[in-house]
Length: 112
Image (cartoon, rainbow, N blue to C red; front, side, top):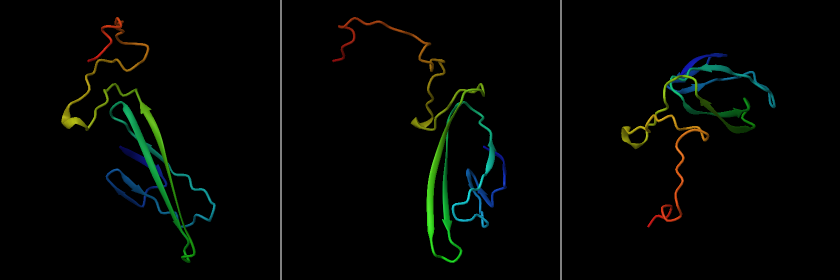
């Protein structure tokens, strides 16, 4: 969830935040630093869409970007909103070097 940012958003509705940067020159750069808090472990994706239009109406440019962050330090297992409420069992078997290994004979490995 959103905690803070610099500069502050011009509009904020739920998970949507909008910044209006009227002083940004063509080919200019604006930096928006923001803080969010993850309350459960999991993968979070933040997407951004930048729309720029010239004040005199002579041009318009749009750009998209995304960043993916994996959080593993909250101590709360990840949850999904898929599958109607069913959750993946918390068996702590997410690491490839941990968990159960089963060796099957070629006959047992075949599915019919």
